[in-house]
Image (cartoon, rainbow, N blue to C red; front, side, top):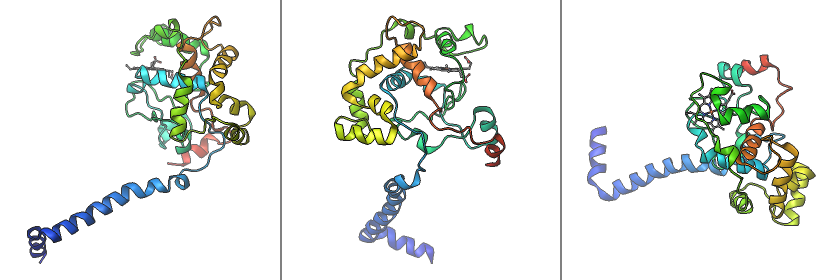
Amino acid sequence: MFKFKHEALETNTGLLLVATMMAISVGGLVEIAPLFLIEDTMEKVEGVRPYTPLEQMGRDIYIREGCYTCHSQMVRPFRDEQLRYGHYSLAAESKYDHPFQWGSKRTGPDLARLGGKYSNEWHVQHLIAPRSVVPESVMPNYPWLMENRLNYADIGQRMRALRAVGVPYSINQEEYERNVKDFGPEMAAQFHIPNARESLVAQVRAGNYDGDPSYVSEMDALVAYLQVLGTMVDFSQIKPEELVKFR
Ligand code: HEC
């Protein structure tokens, strides 16, 4: 019976066309429909915010240097991962990441909960010469991060590009005020594109990430980025027992 129907289908162009279209539509719907519901699917999470101009520059350096080829940024909801890294990653935590850095390779450890784990000094030393702090490390040296001045002339354009794909950086008063409501006045000022360069320099002065206040280095930006990873959401209320209960 089945064989007969299949033959009829394959020998009738019109019928085959209709059946093919139906099959493709179902496949298409399954892939496309969830995208329209993504706002509802992603839980709202307190604390998640876009990156400051300096952190965003650091993130771009992270991508340029290919750190993602050895490091993931996603803690999976498994007992062992949570014991090692902390709370599993939430979808909302990477909602302002374009492109996201979840990664699929862990030659080095996951970095999703890295922020605050080490001092700025440790990061600088580790990035210049990983083996000077972790003798068995196979991570490459990145000495130029300290030597290179950060070229942030185009930070405004970078933020505009991100704004075009939905990151709420502001270009006018109205958007700025919305950010004040959503993220507070300090952060809203950082997210205001016309002031991006001043904000970036101010954050370097205040944070002194690379230990050398005389100029803005690529190291400043990368360390600022590394130190914010996984720190936006406050997981301190969640006890370790509750974490592992998940699986
Ligand atoms: C060839 C693979 C490789 C690349 C590329 C690489 N790393 Fe690593 N990374 C490692 C390994 C292995 C470790 C573990 C040993 C160590 O701490 O050095 C590590 C450790 C780290 C740690 C410490 C994590 C922790 O929780 O202890 C940080 C931070 C880090 N890497 C950042 C970076 C950054 C930033 C880049 C890009 C500039 C980068 N890595 C590129 C392999 C790599």
